[in-house]
Every structure is written in structure tokens, then in C-alpha cells.
Image (cartoon, rainbow, N blue to C red; front, top):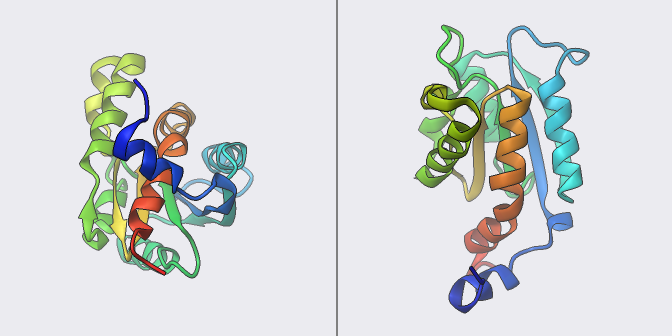
Length: 176
């Protein structure tokens, strides 16, 4: 399928990946900088996509603290996108969606739907247990990903990296 018409025009006006600043957050009560494999993978994949990683944080899964941290990072002066990994499962401490989604001014339901569809191909019916989602906070896209390396790889390579410049371009339309 070609990118002609309006979609192609929008993508042509999108910022180059190297102009995109991303803030990365690993939500975990158990990881340390030495054991944060998912966070390291996320940073590497963002760099490979050409994005400028401006912040890398390890955040405990306390909803109030997580919400405040993401809100502080989702400021246009700081970042163009925030990617949070971890805390999207069904464990008792997995509360990233509850912490962050109240900040969403707009939801991007297609992200979670597509993530689960692609994940289904890899893990089967277990994909329905994922609570991956995305939304816009203060004009900044925020993605909530599972913490597994396979999920991070899938989300970055298949969904976020290919479409983030276009998404940011759309959010900036009409701004000076």
C-alpha cells in the first residue's frame, strides 16, 4: 500500500527521527540499573530508530509517583514522546495504566489494539492479558508497554518507530 494522498503529505511534513526527543521510564519495584534489561533494550531500540533519548528513569510502581513523573516528562520543553515499560500486566503491583491513563487528554486505542494483534501472533491468546495502551498528555504521546524484552521489541520496531514522526507531526500541525 502506498503512502500517497493526505497520509503521504502528512508524513512528508513529519519531523526527522533524529529531531525527536524521547523520555524513557521503566516501571518496576524489583529492577535495578544493573538488572533493567528491558530499559536498556528500549534505549537501544530508540537510538537505532534515530530518536534522541533525553531521559532514562527507573521508577517504582507507586501510582501517585508514576503519574507525577510521567506528567513532568510529558512537557514539550522536555520531550516529544514518553515511553513507559513495565507495570501493564495483571499482577498486584502492575498499576501503570491506572497511574498514567488519567492524564490522557486523548486516547490512541489503535496502539493497544494493534499491539495485542501483533502479540497474538507471537504468544497466542495470552496477548489478551496485555494492558498496553497509549494517549496524549499535554500534546505529547505517551506509550505504556509491557516490560518483557519481546514486547518492547515488537512495540518499538512494528508500531512506535515507524509512526512516531507522523504522530508528532500531526500533533504539531498549526503550531508555531
